[in-house]
Image 1 (cartoon, rainbow, N blue to C red):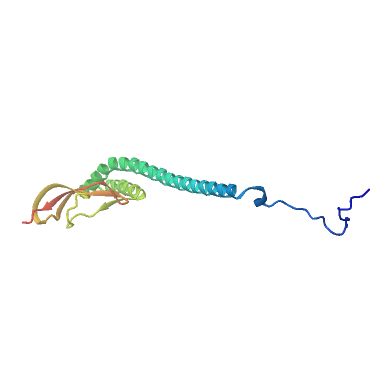
Image 2: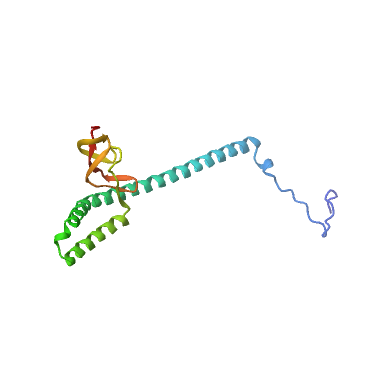
Length: 173
């Protein structure tokens, strides 16, 4: 016996299959809930990525500061040696040529080392006094608050002062 309600099967024609649509499986209220949760998770993920990016920048800045403090500490200890070599170079007329050349070679090595680490002297004579760059040791005749004499050179690494210049400023007399 055959069932009269079933249509005959035609092998050339595909069998229609009803695939369920997402709307027929999940009610609309559940879809809205899932969309809301997805939006919240996406926002949380974006915040987490931003926090991680900020953390990486913070760690890099801390690393740079630690390196700067280490370098500036060592350089600060070398600067008096450089000062002494500069003093020696001004009084070398009494020495023979071989000694002068030896002292000058050591001085050039020290200054090359400082340049390698981006350490630079800064000019002071004739400049206005700035407490960030200068330490006043005395005051004398000259334009008011203008540096008239330098006792010790000032040095910077990049934009940061590692040793202020020791100076004499004008009193306005």
